[in-house]
Length: 282
Image (cartoon, rainbow, N blue to C red):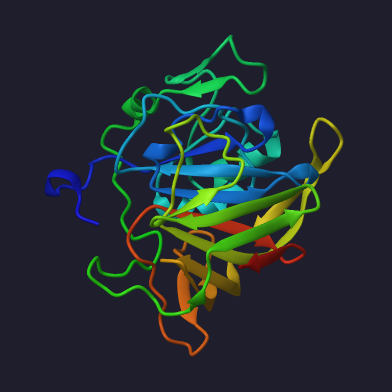
């Protein structure tokens, strides 16, 4: 889409881990995001990787911990990952991948004492990015974007979507007035992320090799290789395939004929759905 004032912001992308359970209410800052990725975490629940580049909100809340899954999500941006911490092996893997990190104790991270721990970690994006002056903006497109004047992809009608990650969590969507609306949205009123596109990727998951503090095994999404994809936009859905040559590589999309599949420009929510999950389109 055209950049404000014709210039792409000269700053890196900021990818913030945000809680996605009822304890997160109200999520703050999501309306300023460009992309949101929903990933599986322990207990069958999900967490969000919220990407900011074109604009920055005054605050993002509640910031939560990082996972090894985040390497494949963040690496293609060449940007900065923000989380409230993480298991030592996770932090070591992220560091080995060369990803810059902002976490507790760094500028821009604080706690809101009116919220319950651990759902009270607050990010000030502008302050956090002050430590990365001179770091480049994203060098390659995160998705294969269509031209702004391109026609929307053809496909069958789709006005609802139920994306089941596990028996414990299903994300439900409704197409309305040019946007996808999240059922039971956790964001503060007026601060909702309302994507023009939903991109559903069927992915493999594996055991990350450690337990969370409650003793639950932690899953890791394998965000490389290939798998089934669904692009939902303009009240329609297109079946296709995704591929990603490496954790650091951008996503590629093709329709079922093998032709390149492009995503209409606009805010986009990416669902990383385990193969054991399901997707129902209505």
